[in-house]
Image (cartoon, rainbow, N blue to C red; front, side):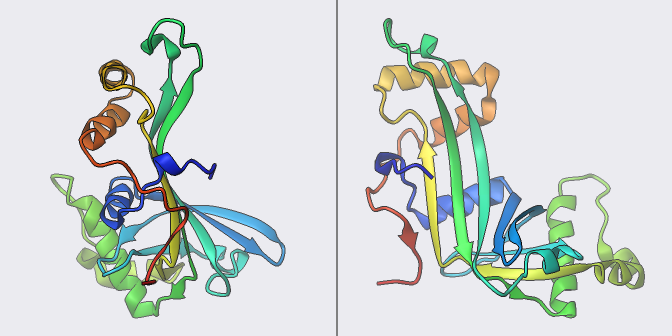
Length: 213
């Protein structure tokens, strides 16, 4: 991402929050045959650092050469166009606010049993929001057969680059006006601006490693 130190997001809890709220991820691999990208849901596997679990539909794992090298996982949070008409008179330059994280790591391939457990958890996580949500264990034999068409993965994030660009370079009154205008056009982005408005300024440390002193 563009080097913008004043928008850096380095707090691990904030990155986990972003992943939980925006689980549809983009997986990018630089393979021996070129760049490959796929899209799958992810869950945060609670740990001291940041670890995610997901699954690939076969044969995507072959195309990605999964487990053989580091990959990039992109998490895209709320984002949207910011009109200069919401700024002070004479300010004419628009921008695009966003919350985004680039996660890096080498995936670990899950066993067949681990994969089924992860798929059950993944399904349960989303089905809990539905009045008559389903569970894989309602037909374990059938869902286990279907699970063979997937391959599970766990990835410990070794380093990440995250940005919360939310008009922090504007005055408080302008930020308040932007947030108010976004409530109508983009409530998710407005909520994120409101949620982070009282937080302390981000660190200016570039590219955040995990597991280091």
